[in-house]
Length: 613
Image 1: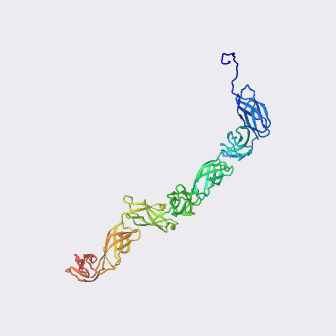
Image 2: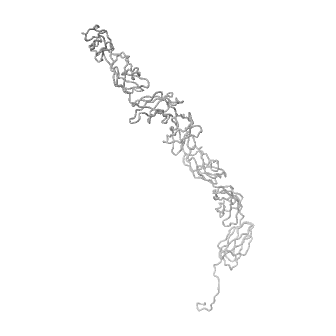
Image 3: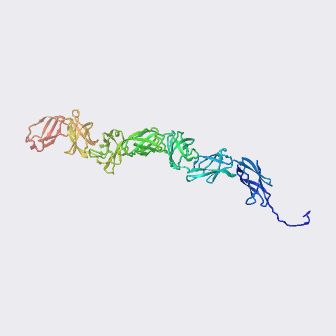
């Protein structure tokens, strides 16, 4: 078309419409010294066009380019260079060039260590020609960035591996994989921490930390790290290691472990450092199995397990119950008797401060007997005696001994294997026959059981005579209910205590009256008390003490039927005290008191008994 007018001529010819040839990038960017390396150049290249590659460097080289799969890439073969240098790659006919670097080959001399745990934080690689930036480390095909420290040292992170194995470690350039080197390392399964005990210990250190887990293996220095403080660890087996806590300030401290000189840190535990528990005293000193020992001190905590260990290494121990910061208790658990060692320790077997090796007396159960039938008044208050088979009398004399009547306990004393206690009152609506045992510190102490019977309270119904002489020596017979003494009998007339006894013939108690000072003509009334079975019983009756009666003369001494009475002269006569006149040991009459010195005895109605002698 010329000048926008009618075409002068027209024709059709085929042609290619293609992008303008250009270079985008090339791979690899690095060429190893001494190696002829294929370089792939990516860009826009028409298949029908022949391109040439020009490598400009100290020794320029021109080679024909080979078309790759499609029009987006060409392959240029570099010459082998004898020394490191920078070169440019030019596709003849195009404006762009690509900058390449010829470098010495990478060489790996050693890995430190050569044996590591799977997943170890780092493997130190020693070699040559490491270049920062763009280098890769591959373990079993799993790639990580190689951290280049300098030209001869780099660090690679390992990968997890389930079983011990020897694997290949490759290092290469990200932009030049052909420049590489390979070595072998041995991987072991990563250690796993399952339990750590105890979880607390004293700030002074010295607590043995027991660590259980899997895959424990020494691949270097083994240690436990308490925060920033490191202590040596001992590997006992593949599942057991231990270390000793350092001295450190009170508080919670993170704990980690390493078995390969710190390359791999395992565990995420916490350990609590605490101030020591101080023990002041342990009581009682004499006990039976099951008895609670009371611990007093300071610093007791409910989150710290405390053990009371008994004996000499027999493994007998019990756990203490913390009551407060100053009190705790633990039951006696021992297989031996007599004096046994006592140690109070925390769960990490560290002895509590102040708890020096102590002894308690672990007493076996005792046989209990009684010399007399055991019974007593419903009112209680009666002292009884029991015998026990003990070889530690002196210890028991200072111990908390009790008598257990049924379910009721009363305090007791012990002297030379004799237990004495007072009976408690009988409880109405309960059996009168109850079991009787002995306890020590509230625990069962007797291995056998006795019986105690409650009976109705002793009661006096009659005393005879009621009137007695102040000169004493009269046997007063006391009759009543349950007056059956088990031991000594005493009598008390007012405040005058005298001898008493049990008259088995009369089945009664008899009291011998005391001698009492008396004014002439006066009569004294005293209440009578009996001491039976350890208690005083009020008879609720009185005995009257009067002046002794003395007879000086009788008149008439010769009598006949006309005589009605006999006049008696003497002393001690009283209208208050009944006086009887007895004739021939058979007939009697009641005397009439005329004065303190005179009384009249009427003759009996049957005078014949009197007039015969």
